[in-house]
Image (cartoon, rainbow, N blue to C red; front, side):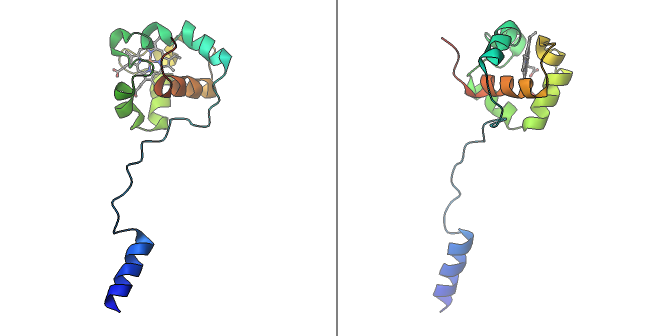
Length: 115
Ligand code: HEC
């Protein structure tokens, strides 16, 4: 009986299994990335994020982005809007709005570099 109860508890809470290694969720997973966003990225963010200028995390460099993504979307967006060390406020995209920045960050942090 005691064994059964333990098995039940373990089954309900999943305690007997080690937690699955889930990768962090893609940032701004609901932000749609359009061709226009990619064009804007090429004119603005790419100046630094294509080649790592000033220590910028490069597009598609998942190792460089991982600790940044771990900060959460709110911090990433705030650092983009307000600037962060060598990262200029708005990242030079003066006509981008919140959803545009969400899409641009998602594009950089989760896509492979354009060839
Ligand atoms: C003039 C160069 C430059 C431009 C242009 C630029 N960035 Fe950055 N960005 C940086 C640098 C440098 C860092 C790293 C700052 C640090 O960690 O000290 C950075 C970091 C970031 C981060 C991570 C912030 C964090 O909290 O770790 C995000 C997100 C980001 N940039 C988004 C953008 C977006 C979106 C654009 C285009 C709209 C853009 N950047 C344009 C230089 C730039």
